[in-house]
Length: 245
Image (cartoon, rainbow, N blue to C red; front, side, top):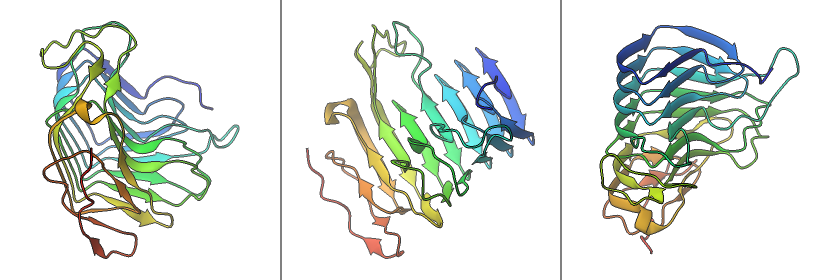
């Protein structure tokens, strides 16, 4: 059902490779990485009832050529998971864990079959820093996903006091810092999904290289210097959206 442990879970690791595995119908996250760095996660085939490829407080790692699919439970049908990729924080309570930093996330496939009911985003990027997200594809075949978007970029507010070990963020929020998001597709499958940012512009720091992504729509509203262009569901290039504060 939607109850279970992770397929592969690591905490506080420095240097590990997870590759060429098939992880099927897991009730929780097929791969869950916590407080770790120097990871190589690649060429895995994953399916889960409500889990995701989960990267919490992970640094200096490469995630590439994986495939993750939402599946119905063989016992009691579809469950509403949230995301097929989550990058962010383990907790928002008082802590001093590092922000997700220096990640390369490329050439992954995320698949929602018909009937999937996830309410969030296929790819959540919370408080991510100095990372490269490119050539990933979301295949959506479900018309019942509700408010799901393809990619959601946002800061992570803290409920407690966060002591950033890198010393560059305040105690109240993990901010988004200088990332490149390019050549991703959110129009595969039968129902295209969108890309968006949320949060206050003061919590989106540095540049954002957002170019050549294909999505149903794009909502990025802060005054970034390099928003680039995106493609609509028809495949026609659209001019960059006007930056506004």
